[in-house]
Length: 597
Image (cartoon, rainbow, N blue to C red; front, top):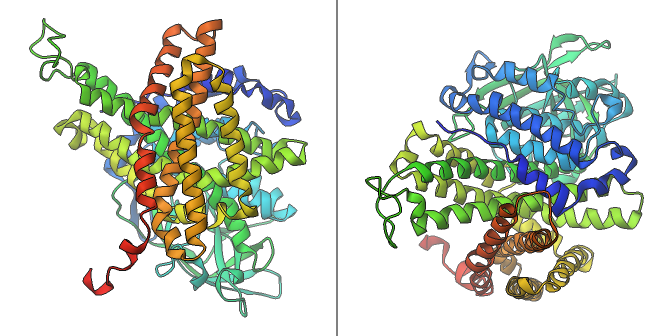
């Protein structure tokens, strides 16, 4: 069975050397959270994930959730693990202290989240949805709603969900049919059916708080007429005790390819008591608060699964004896050499590692930008962070999950036939990773968001901000002669991205299908460039630490430099092929007759 090892050392490098998270202490809210405290928190989180969550991963997958007469039971051990997780304060790690949270940086929560979902993705879905509900109520709920619901969600006494999807309406939320009507007492009654609701029903908490999108009578057509409602499983009394069961029930649970320990429910709302969140017909604004956070969270899910697959694939490659090295025997005392000597095994593992460590750096930078957005006193700095996070969100969601699925497949391939059977655990990583490319907006939806909204916003303001950050890194790295080849490769890739952006702006303006046909390839190109920025920075910092000393052994920095060179030489060249493909035009895609399919 697989084992999990938390990447605490890599996070220590990111927080203390690559980005210097001590700058976060300049914000008064984080003044007492220096990097060494953050690392201590990560060490504790790592132990919890290794010792509590990881041992439940395979058994939770094998057992799955059960549904009977509307009651959903999670796999053995999940309930006890959730209580321990909640009692440890992990749900409220970055929550508002006024409502029971610890108020620690989002940067730190991102790191903890990667470990949680990497060690047991199905389990991580439950507190993850609760965190999303907390953020939405904090941002859009009334003062009374915040005071009543947030402390109970933060403590893990109650859990949260988001209820968007309907059988006929996935991404196209404008055509939802769930209805709400207001009563004289100011409450609402919600009726309709939602599907694919993660954690919609379970036995982990006493109550579940559903955030539901619905339309009021006479509401405008499309998304402009959507409102958000808070619908509890049990209608609470004024003192927080549970009142009667509300008109929301679980009609069934889905039998899925992966994340089987996560209950994915059909929820039926039958004149259920609900409370308006925010303003009428402003539900999409509230939804995007939850959805954007969820999209970043899904990117972290992919990263965590890839990390777990990589760790186990490396261990297997060191021990598995198969064939002899092409350059001569490396294990003369054995009947064969470890498969780690073979070039294809090494290429697979380095591809995984280059993605994982580059993606982790990009996620950490994004977390620091969100903290800047939330806490920086400078309006200009906050605006800069908002733009960069908005641009990076679809990239993190789609590019991370695409490469995560490829990485978990590579990890399974290292095991050969043993990877395909359940005993090794590697096939579960593949199955669990596949959903990341679908939910919270499919990856093509993310690509369309990138080319259709983010590139156009503010006459290209978001892309210009990113280009400035990338240019600054290229300039800083150019000062190191040892990095001339990497700087040149990054400069070429940045130029390719710029040309692709200009091509899209020119051609999509006259033919919108050009944007649709090129979107996924453009996002992938952007993703390679964004990871390249992280690897160039990593190479620069590693070079500086080798020359002047750092907090890690020389081998650490030397390994970083070697992986950086692998990335630029073996992975970054893919940007050229992507450019050629996306600029081939939509004609060959759209002119094919529909009846010929």
